Amino acid sequence: MRISVVDVGSKTVRLVVADAQGGVALPVHTAKWPLRLSEHLTADGSIDGAAVERIVASVAEARRTACRWGATAPLAFATTVVRSATNRREVLDAVRDGAGVDLCTLPGEVEAELTFLAARRWMGWRSGPLAMLDIGGGSLEVAFGRGRLPDFVASLPLGAGRLTEEFFTADDPPGPEVVRELRRRVRHQLRDAAARIRWEGPRTAVATSRTFQQLGRLCGAEPGRHGPFVERRLRRPDLRAGMERLAELPAAERAELPGISAPRSAQSLAGAVVAHTAMKLTGLKEVTICPWAIREGILLRHIEDGPDWWGEISSRLDPVPPPRRALAIEGAGREPVGQPGRRSAERPGEGPGAAAGERLGGKLEKKAGRALEKKSGRPAEKGRPVPAGA
Image 1 (cartoon, one colour):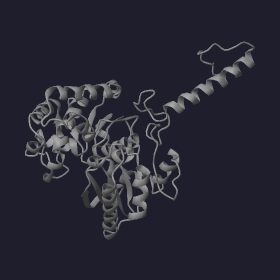
Image 2: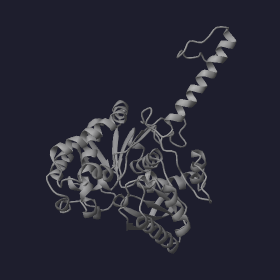
Image 3: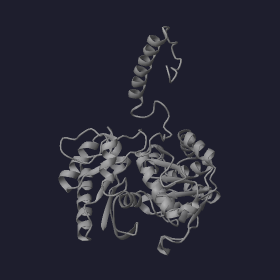
């Protein structure tokens, strides 16, 4: 069976075509098309028309390429930039109508779950309790688990592209105080998730994404041309030295450093600040650079759980039905799919469902109080928990 995945990210549209043999996704073809969506966001948070047209054209070409390689209809998803866009629904509809592909947006927690699965399969069971870090253009995913899927996931708005736009557009290179301000932001938003990772005490830590791959190369890891099976590690002291080196240079000169590509040179400093701060707060002295990430996680989940799992995720998240049939996966801030009772690191009041949850909780508390009064003959104290057997 030959399957394909299309990933609409902040920088590129990427296609992976793979053969599913013996429970392993063996890549046979990859391709990418440039996007740079973060440069095409309007003041109201929408993706401009020209960028939407490029998304449609790129996804259509990816579908045709997958077809030429004998793959089934691609499993297509978009990450943070499209997910957060105010015209997200229009983008998804345009891709469906113009490219013939049902593009969906994955909640950050589901992205973390799938990336963790890929890392677990790459590292194997001998890695034991596993922590994972993944820096994208719009978000940072953190996960920990002892099994196939994680016990804990968090998705935080700490992507390298997002933070570059917010902090590093005024001066190139930015001043030391601006870099310190960014570090303070990362520490504040990461502290709860980092505390959980420290408490768990992982035996092995992995880092995925192009950001970590380029930082690893900057700090002395083997180049990509040596293949995926060469072990690549990133030590925290080396990363700090690399971060300081990036902070001294304008973006154009960073592109001349080992591993730093020209399209990602501007956001390389923000990525390094997030990576070093995350490793320091979580107590990780070293991470292994994992070549597999979310695309491989989707392929593996498709192989291991069957072709129906994609639609099952959609139904569990209960998205708002679009005008016409489309596969949409929404629900960031809810519990990760397929893991009842597992909680993310989102603090109360921050998630999109927080207000609704508070209203529902208040109604349930009042109803339980009235039931207790009726049974016991005395009023229940306000704020006092109702006994389970009352």
